[in-house]
Length: 74
Image 1: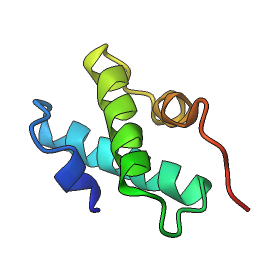
Image 2: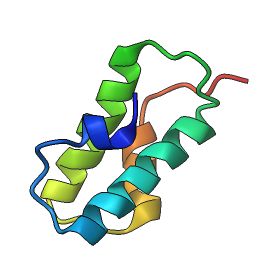
Image 3: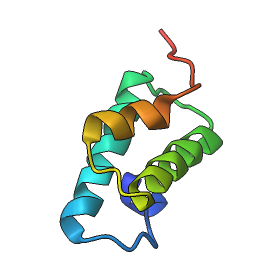
Image 4: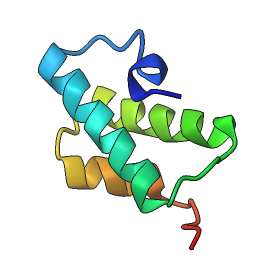
């Protein structure tokens, strides 16, 4: 599912939404996303949004927070 679809309803400036979408795509890439269950994508998006709503804007910290506890598939 595209990042923008999962981040719909987020009340951020357009530049922030773009950055959040980039972070979402980065997390999926780092997890070697190839057909993850949709719930995993939703969890990633929810974690990114939660951190962003708390004021986090650093892409590296957003990425790390979104990946916390998720297993990388190789």
